[in-house]
Length: 132
Image: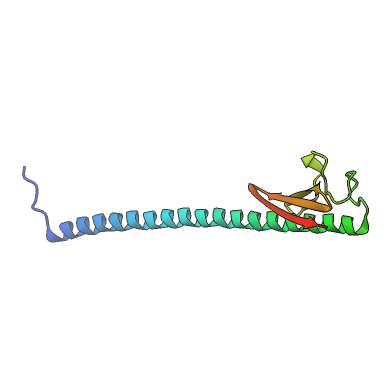
């Protein structure tokens, strides 16, 4: 028994089927690529936001410490005027949204050097100022 010869329409159908499979594979690769790229962009955006949050927290802590020095009072109750949460307990550092801050004061002659450290996520920022 012999098989009947293939018709040209059968070959066209097979070629169309293979072409559609190839097109679908490329389409899936494009979708996966766009998802991976958008995930990277999202991670970068979160890191940038955490960097800004930690900077603004450090700036706010510096303002709080300077206010304590101007008012000559320990407003946060950590025992020292001009420091904010300088008690080696990270759990009670002031929280600003998702960022935390503490300020350390060192005295060098008539100058007080304030160092404010803000943190949010994995981002850390430090500001230093001298007050006479």
